[in-house]
Length: 76
Image (cartoon, rainbow, N blue to C red; front, side):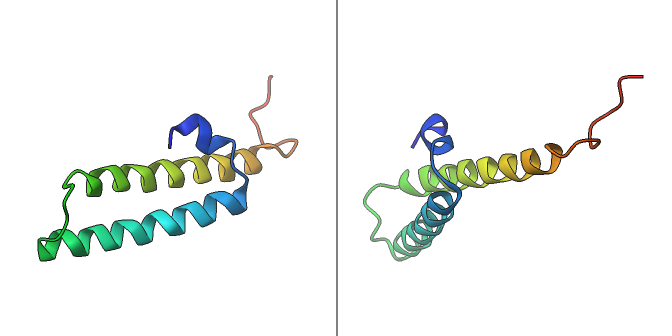
């Protein structure tokens, strides 16, 4: 899923998607370790997807923290 589409998701959808993707990554690593993984690039793609989801969740956390008045730098 591209970053632009991930940014359209709500927080709850992001959390659910991250949990699903993390589980898929675990399963893919297990299959790779046992030699059953057919598409070896799947682990790399899933790692990137988890990182993308975590990055966007963190961006949102930081945006919430900076939206309060007086939290930014002063103009003087």
